[in-house]
Structure formats: C-alpha cells, structure tokens
Length: 439
Image 1: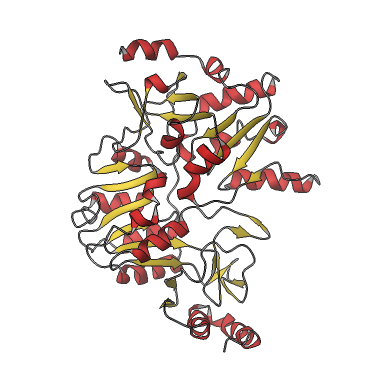
Image 2: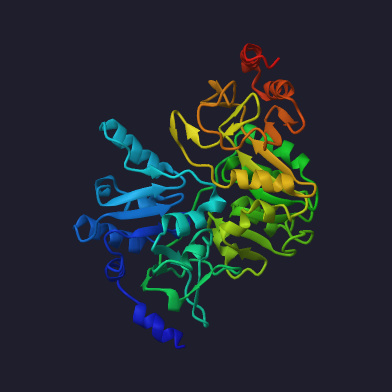
C-alpha cells in the first residue's frame, strides 16, 4: 500500500473536507485539545451559509475551539449539541437561552466516561468522527495524541473520518492510532495546542494535598482529576518513591512527578514500567513530555476506566473532587445552582476500581466551604443527582481532616462528616442530623 499516495489523494482544503459531512450526520467530535480548529471553522461556515443542516454533534468537554465555531448560539437550529460532559461553553449557551425564555439548545446525556465509546458507537450510532491527529508515520498511521479516549473506538466503526493533521500534536504510543486507509479526508493545519493554565492552589488545597499525600504509600499507582487540588496533591507527593500512573487524564502535576523520577512505574502490577492514560490536557511542558515517550501509553477510555482493569493495579489510589457530600456520604460532583455544571466523567469508574484494588484507596476531596465561605459543601441533602453513591464512597478529605466511611453506620457517617465541615456549619448540620434521626 502506497501510504503517501493515499494521503495525497485524501488531502483537502478545510472547506472540501467539511463538505464530506452531510446533512443529518451524527458526528463524534474530539474531546478537549483534539477539537480541530480549521475543520470546525469550515463546518460552521457551511452551516452558516445553509449548505448543511440537521447536524448532531456528540462530545465531551468542549473548548473555545468548538465554542467559537460549531457551538455558536446562532447555529443551534442547524447544529444540535449532544453533550456528555458540560464545560463553560454549554453553560453559556444554556444561560443565553434561559435569558431569552427559550429551552436549552444543548441536549445533555448522562453517562460514565468508561461507557462513552459503547454509547457513541452502539446506542447513538455515530457515523462521523472529526478530530486532530499527529502527522502520519512511515507505516501510514496517525496518532490520536492527547486524545485516544473515545476517538479510537469510534474510528473503528465510523463511516466518515475527517482528521486535522497538526505538527504540534504529540505522537504517543499505545493503542491510539488510525490508519490513513480508514480516513476520508485530511486537513493540514499547524496551530499551537490549547494550553490550560495551571490553577494556583488556595490554602485549603495545600492542606488537603498534605493530608492526601500522607495516605499514599510508596509504590502506589495514581489517578488524579483536574484542577488546583489534584495539582496540590502531586506537589505534596514529591518525596515519595516508585509511584505509578493509571489515569483517565494525564495532568501537569502527574507529568512533573514523572519528570523528577517520583513516578517511575517500576512497582506497577499492570503495565509495569509504563504510565497509562486516556487523554491529556495541560501546558506545553505536558505536551512536550508526551511526544514519542516510550514510558507512556494512551489507550481507549473503555479500557483505562474499566473498574476491573483499574483494580488490577495494586495499591491503586484515586483522587477526585466533588461539589457536595450529604450526611450519608453520597456525592454530587456535577450539578450546581440548579443546573448541570459538568458531568459524572470517570469519577465512579475510579472510585470502584481503586477500592477493588489490593490495598487500594478511593479518595473524594473538597474544600469544606464554597462561595467564599458562605455555604458548606457538606450538606444535609444534595442539591442535584448522585454522582458517587454512598455505598461506594471510601475516604473523604477536607482541609479539616479525613475519614474512612467504609464499615460505618449512617449515624457514624453523619458524625464523621460533620467533623470535616467548617466549624461555623457544624451546629446546623448536627441539628439537621437530629431531625433526620441520624444522631
């Protein structure tokens, strides 16, 4: 097979490539960093000109790349967003519709991250994939780079695959490629990858980071979520030894642990010597570290987030944040001020996988208060859906300490969680616990 000839045959301008996507298409758009700017701009322009309509766009975690193109409010009658994980883009669209007295233009699909490939391929039946990839190698393969997650599984079933080749996209190893023979259209576009600034930790983050670091043993394998709090945990782990990485999201904090030799994967019981991830978002240092790094492997989220796979890592430690915890231990990590804020993502996948691991620990962390201290994150009742059920919650951490909820009665849980709340809210929570008959 002449890979170069196939590449040349399928190389198109952005508008020519966007024309491969017909009205009525069910499109899977790459997550986060892999959203292709030139291709999405061309697709939005075609929709604006009325050359395509009734497009159904399925995705997790949109960025400004999509928000400035295919997810513009004025295109919502031609491009219908189906979000599996909200970002600020969807929240803005919903707010504008609310202000105009209209129903939300965004359809939200509740799902766990691990299930998203099956949902997209089997339940929805997406027929088109659009994403950014690294340049083709000598064997005709493009690497999905920062985003293998659901892109790899969808690439195996979609009828139309349109890729944007960006020389800045790192080439990564693992189960994370698509062959040129499967691709319908290729756009070349060099652009810096979307960088996510490192969030500065607050004093509560630093306190929580120190508490969690004390719970992590040398030789543990880590999963970290996004934000200042997980980065503070990583900073507090820099005196540990022989840590490993098995995570849905590869973060700057985890990369720094690898760069200083703290995370070397040598004691991992699954994929020893190799860090495993499904997608990455971070700074340029993160993307540079990913490029052609044999010490990392990207794999589909259906594998990385499978609780049975996670549990094969001995001493697995998962660290995830939440928005609210009720007095029984149930967590809402996705709903805020009466609206969908993000989604469940992979939180429950890793909560269950880590607790199923030999010596594993699942940690849910949050600041004790929100809204500049005006409200407690530990509450009598959740304001939204349960992201992680009380049956599954293991260790809870705030800046005031930590507790293990496993094996505890509802009464014991209520007392333990009240002790983790900010002092000014403890009396009110105690009174509510009495009203509920918990204490």
